[in-house]
Amino acid sequence: MTDYSTFEKLDLRVGTILNAKNFPKANKPAYQLEIDFGSIGILRSSAQITNRYSLKELVGKQIIAVINIGIKKIAGFESQCLVLGATENEEVVLLAPESKIPNGKQVL
Image (cartoon, rainbow, N blue to C red):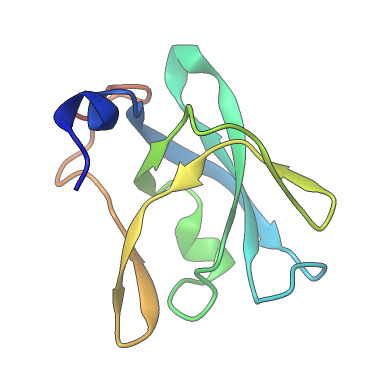
């Protein structure tokens, strides 16, 4: 169990995927994403979501991500944020706002 103050340190934000491409160097099937977080800027992320989403349907999709988790190097790629999802039938389903929200808005 963690305390609430630890959770408060995570910065969760709404962003829109601008670009998605295959990531053939990754150990497990993944995409490289560029995500617009408004005034925060554009961050990149690696996401193992190839079973459920096509590249085409990801562009323009709003997502929720942790943006202050640090950089993780994955096969030479710098993943700058962690896109959030839940698993269903061994596939990752992206967490997303119910309606369109300005990029960069904080998730409370």
